[in-house]
Length: 582
Image (tube, rainbow, N blue to C red; front, side):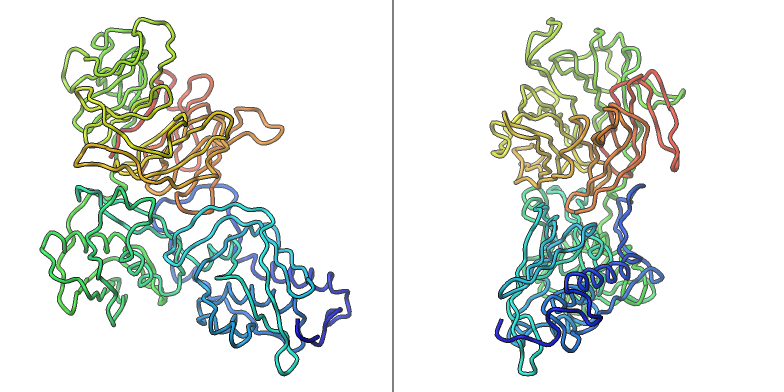
């Protein structure tokens, strides 16, 4: 540092420096606690997370105090960053030298740290070090990437200005925010892209500042999907599209969206573009507290027309399917429907049914996959990976899932595979799964994304989400994976899609707990904050993939269903539960 500044060594009250800083940090934490408290139980909705005007919080922060010590300057700067979206970071820049203020880009990267532990601020010889437990980071497009790193250190070099006041001269790119400040200043909201056949919407979770949220959502949508998702989705947005001079104005519940650079769109593309914009904006709240209910999209002054009608991402998938005394049934209540009678399957080894979009039922029988078209009186074997008569077989198949394109997904000998109704295998290319064993998987409701638990010899499990790459309807491989480290620790291999933007696992037992202790953990795909859902003790779970409806099976074979916040036993004679895809 170039020169000493007033106030170094003791706080204003005369306390030793370490005690004064501790008081400052604790005081700040107490002030913000009401705004940034994190949930420790309950459930988070799968829809866009936006808050009405009565919940909006405009934070403010004080500028640098006269004579503030280096550590206090850095702490003040960190606080001002959390409040910076409402003053364009003017207060935060006041803690910087002129050169640093001119070059600093606050949203170049937002490092997110665990706010349950206060940052450790230490004065070094020529700088101030701030150490946090990093969770991940958010890029300018709102994409969160998990990157857990304990004791992550950021260094801030300071210099004294002409008045002898300390200012930050060198600092890391972007800024640091606690996970609590992230949820206060940012909204977790979904952008909507298209399946390659343009038949369904595919959501992607982003974290964007609440200030001017509707415009930020459209800018992010125009920027396209994240790298991990891009291989399996499409968009009707032309590459040259941009937000026009009028931006996004919300009045009386309607968002007027001004776009430019669209070129000449045919009616079909225009309708799909409006559908993406409408799905992305509806539910978002403007700075004036108005919630978007409809959109009016214009390109270079011309209306684009109405949105193409596409199924909502929370389309009801239908009742749960399972096995009951050798038959395939739909529903767990006394009014359940028999889809395939036991005599049709012709064996007492049938298990793990899945229901296709055309009514075809697929069932495992030891190491074979059986197919029963709707109304058929006999089952066909469309896949066999071992000796069908063996009591036990090393080449077991994982529970199958029928996607909406007529392909059935399973895994054998640890390798993921997909077959059509005639048993033809798709050639799936997924380099990141080579030499790894697939332990469990689940498809998202629109059949465009997959969640996979996998491991290699001598290494820990990993849970990854990836886009499904298709040639027409035929799956050809998986895109690059997005890792979900929070989903790795679980009591079973199972990982299921809980809703359109999150997965769920059975929570691992805490120290001292029984191995079958209750609890489900919901993990957002592209977000830092997992949610614990209190539940009965369970050994298996399934979810409907769209609304967060859960079915749990306990060690006694009882099926538990949730009604409001309470759980009840819905059946005792149905096993191998799974929901059809929407």
